[in-house]
Length: 184
Image (cartoon, rainbow, N blue to C red; front, side, top):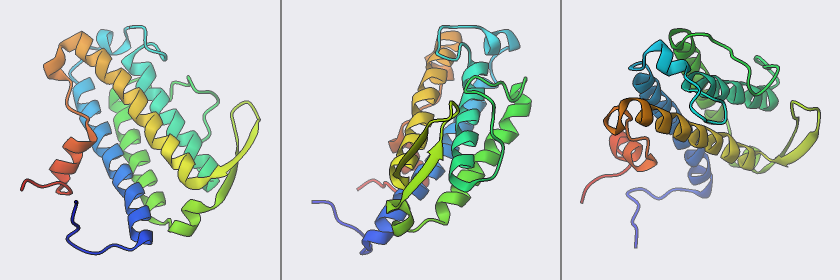
């Protein structure tokens, strides 16, 4: 049976989950950007069959998705015109914007409590359809969406540079590196 070093309230457990996901998201994005920086410009832009075509298209889509969701959640920030919008033409331009958006996500999540996470939130999609759902389930999607498309970029980098060039993005690797998992 698992043991906890400190007793945790349900509130702490619920809010900590999303803080960990935000930290993992930033960690994984930085690792992926570092791997992508090893690509030539031609490799970075090569259409390789991913849903958004290339590493370039997919990394831009990840940022577009987060900006759309953060706009829906906070009411502020940029609202890209479409899911395939190219926000930045180079990885050098995209990387600091990605880092800033990850910090924005972490700050937003840090301000949430369990009641807010359990409350319903309404938003409008890019095609104008209105939806209402529990905020925690929206955040589940936001973080899962990141994982899904990071996996595509990881596969593209592996195919272009070999498996050794693509870093581990496993959540457990982050947990071990950040100290939330320990040996023994």
